[in-house]
Length: 124
Image 1 (tube, rainbow, N blue to C red):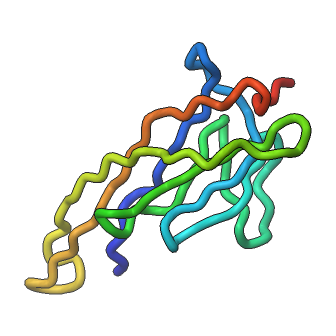
Image 2 (image 1 turned 120 degrees about the vertical axis):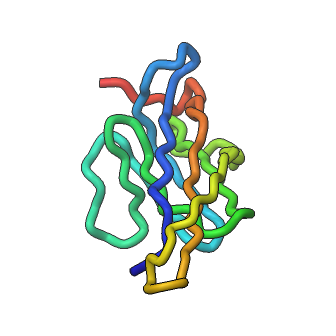
């Protein structure tokens, strides 16, 4: 059995804190990078990042020092600067998960909502 925590959900919001769709890219340590588009279903092509209900679903946390960055595609096709997304990482031990006396420490990450810049917010 693997020793991975839960996926990290990153809600995308406007200045008022309401959910908002956007397009952009993420880079997540050496684990995942790729484009996202919250207006369409994720593609089966490797590299696409799942976005459901204006919330990105990022791969599980692997290390205590994992870092997540995001940037948004503006209406004119340019991109915002990369901005860090602070992760809160909590450890938990799964006892005997790989057999007797073979514990596993998993890391669960959480992130605060990320405000999408006004020029990158997509509305219906």
